[in-house]
Length: 179
Image (cartoon, rainbow, N blue to C red; front, side, top):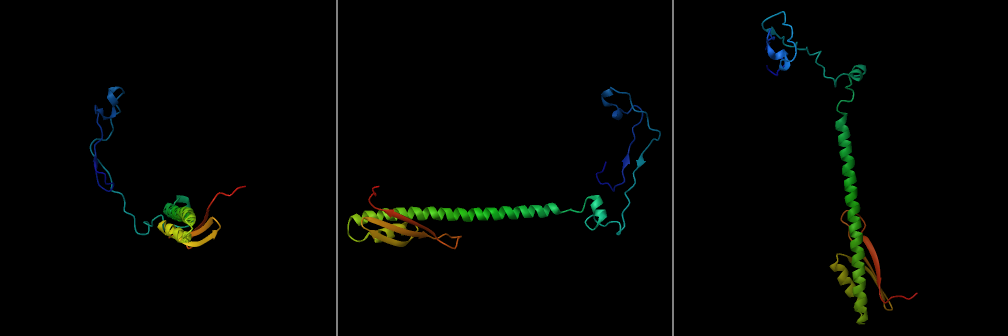
């Protein structure tokens, strides 16, 4: 039997004693059909151009009755959801990049302050130069260096590729303060 619905097909009716109507022989056989021989199935009628208007072209009450008023709305919803997910993903990446740059700035400031304090103990006046070298080695730029007795205070900045302002951090190193 052909799967094409427009195809003319011959169907054989079961006759008496045909096992097709009796499952496993456990029931009575069906009564034999009155007509014998092949049955001719008709080809479906082809609609005219005025009858072939797709459901999308229908408007008003006809479309609402047939349930086709929001045909294709799932595509719009999927695109909207994809847009929202994309925006959330980009925002998460930007915020993650800013957080990483902030951590790098704090680390560079701490290490530069320790290097400057260590160099200041040598009393050769190169504490800020040593701090600047360590800050550059950690991907930061030295923005400020101040010496106050045995303490050194360092300010650094790290550029954030996806943010207009750099991440900034300050750190102090020196002898422990009492009280």
